[in-house]
Image 1 (cartoon, rainbow over the protein chains, first blue to last red):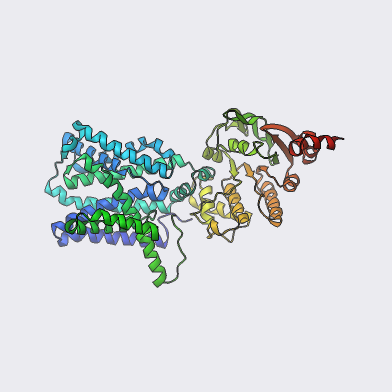
Image 2 (cartoon, each protein chain N blue to C red):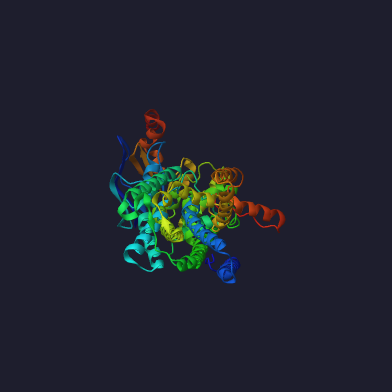
Length: 323
Length: 246
């Protein structure tokens, strides 16, 4: 088997990634208005979070409704590092990522559960962290939240930091999926016990992915906090937020390495459009989208794309990815 | 030389003693038939040796090393691998990928090596022309071959086969018997197999080990075992045993 970074497919991916990142990278220099600049920053952060969620939810098949916990921890730890220690901002994000990763490792007992039981337990994880951090006023400022010392230059530069993050997370997604690690994760997803019978420790790999995913979630949370420059536990740890990662991945294509990118673009576009015109409709529309996807196209937009590509394009063998 | 040894291996589920002080010896390059009536504890014994369940008491030695209580994935790396009575292929992976993923840990460095080992194993079981198929497109016999290839790819010293011939047609059964013999002859792997298909096990096994209600009741060559009154009693009842003795 070829290593993940070899072969024509990998080369195509590398070229596409470099082109897209370079284009997006020079976009602000050419000049786009501040609104689009900000929305793109937010989009990058959203994509990175959804991709990291997909490692656990898609590759391992453990649907987590508790990823907001790591997101919030990353946000508050990085905010605290800025406020109390006055460290450089990127260093604070990394600090948040490390703490979020360690926290994810602490969730180890949950990983004994599989399927719906795991999902239900993660709801508990998310809600418990929300409550703890809401009442831990010394650290999080409680319901009145924290203001971050982010100046306008940093906020402007955040665009590129988020772009770099999303690039790295996209590469990691493809690397995991195409490497032997990805194969092991698919085996665990199919049957954890049978995986153990061929020498794969489901416990170890689930821990590994949960920690990686949690750390990236923490990084994402830290950047998001810097973007908002004001954070509050009920929002950062909120169930809405936890659900949004699930939604994005499902709409884009669960288990497809870059599916959540598509999902996030649609999610953010819909949100921007509906929040300004029909704010009361937008959650309802997501619900509807979710039902449609689950009923008709379990691989989401990616599945739809493949179906169309098969109809119009040259005949390619069906790709039997991720059930 | 002794390859695998269990000493007083015991498993209790609450008040039920599923396996009771079993002392099993498997020699190097041997095919050992493990037989017994339904519920005798064959699969429980397998599961303990393969690390899927923890023994209540007793120990398991592989080439003189303790493997008692190791989790399943560690047992595989130590060299003990099992197949399941009900096949469990990874449905989301192709035939080749199913076996590659098993071969990864067999020889640590390089995925290229894993690919080769997987190819060899699939060639050996006769699935060399189905590499890109998904398991759902295979027949039951095909999926059993896949399960066997997956086990082989881990590079085992001891192979535990749980009813590998059961449920396939007679022609396939004969092919499987030949395959198991080849695995032993060409790879020097020691095999323990359970089976309800008596002709298969009697013709294949060098020795047969009989359990009934968790206890070992006989051990010996196939000819010795079928003549053993305790074995006849376990399978056909004490009346039949008395008749056979007279």
